[in-house]
Amino acid sequence: MNICVFCASSEAIEKNFIESGERLGMLLAEKNHTLIFGAGKYGIMGAVAREIRRNGGSAIGVIPAFFESADVTFTDCELIYTQTMRERKQIMEDKSDAFIIMPGGIGTFEEFFEILTLKQLGRHKKPIILYNVNGYYDSMLGMLDEAIEKSFMSLKCRGLFYVTDDEQDIFKYLDSYEPFQYDKYENKHL
Image (cartoon, rainbow, N blue to C red; front, side, top):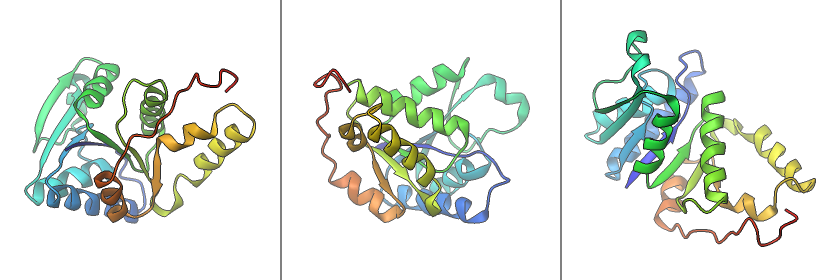
């Protein structure tokens, strides 16, 4: 399975977030999955990539060419260069069979909401897992609950992604995944 991991590329984050990426990379290799990622060598992104490669796994990095001069590219993998960030996301989405969202900043938020929106609109039925390390996404989940409470989002939409704080649970979910049946337009008021 090709698994896309969206996550932080910052080195300024707490070590326990980096360690969660290392554990995930090790498990991806152990379970013979291929990592699809943003090709960064720093932060959680770099940690996942280093560990999957250190443990004999495969990785495909997708990165805009303009990052080349910044020296941020993880090169121990197959690399696909794009012209734009939009093209990068499209390739990552198309190549992936599942998505794991780890802690990250605005880029990660945007990636999560895009693939969630695409799933809501029926453009894919791939699993989306929010890996909520140390409760990082608790506030965002509260915001989504408020959107449901105030009818900006349907309760059924919440079933389009899975939340866990345990990397072993990620793979149990993937192994038993059944697409959640959802039609955004079944109730036109939501």
